[in-house]
Image (cartoon, rainbow, N blue to C red; front, side):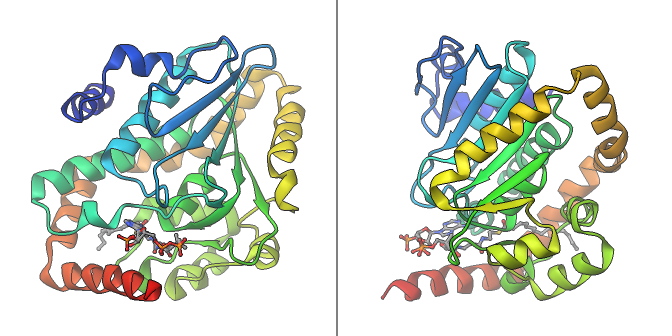
Length: 292
Ligand SMILES: CCCCCCCCCC/C=C\CC(=O)SCCNC(=O)CCNC(=O)[C@H](O)C(C)(C)COP(=O)(O)OP(=O)(O)OC[C@H]1O[C@@H](n2cnc3c(N)ncnc32)[C@H](O)[C@@H]1OP(=O)(O)O
């Protein structure tokens, strides 16, 4: 059902499904019919690298989210691929998180469609049967950080500009319960409480210390490290690893699934408030002014 909705969005966005499917082909060549998601398949190794390509900052627009969801679903259903590396095609920015313009000045139906797609991406990532490794080669606030937290392992490039964290409170918004749960499952309750309230963005050394990432490596070694991690994980029999992953994570996703519609309604009414719209507009303005 979610895939059908996602396809509806893609069709409205003018993306042809026949060619989009080719973006996840497995013959070892890069296919880029999907505009915003590049897939580099290595069928022999059973690994695909997904590169985000949604300039300028890989923010999660509805179209980008939809392409990512469809791409992940295709890889999930293709037994050739047992592991996926998520990274950015534009070193410097992994992902700026949710697209602020999707949450500003739109109507409730749009907010609902957008939020359903955000939920869907998280559900696809968090309980994927594949081994997911985030090769974080740039800044990764909020929704960008959530994507990496939803992977099985995180490698961060050692660059002080590449901060990671859930900074929602700095925008005057609140991370929903399933963002919180994903963080708590990763770094524990006390560290999450502090990080979420203060909207902390951690530079690499601190991110490693608090457990937001598993490894910090020189920038030019992020991809090779992700590959060697995935190779180690591939040595574990799939069925045992997958059941274990499910045992660790399914309760968290079930919690959202059982209140998915209510969560959408909460989001729509929260984001539609005048005060929240004003906060978001001010934040967008601040980003603009930073440049001048
Ligand atoms: C009661 C509870 C109910 C529950 C309700 C739920 C509530 C909502 C929960 C929402 C959850 C998640 C939130 C998010 O993910 S919000 C997004 C947070 N993201 C950020 O704060 C990142 C902001 N961006 C930056 O910090 C920087 O841009 C960067 C990523 C570090 C890159 O810096 P840069 O110097 O390289 O680039 P910059 O000049 O700043 O930006 C270039 C252009 O890109 C635009 N832009 C940046 N980020 C976003 C974004 N997230 N969405 C849309 N557009 C973005 C920026 O404005 C520039 O545009 P322009 O060139 O000026 O037009």
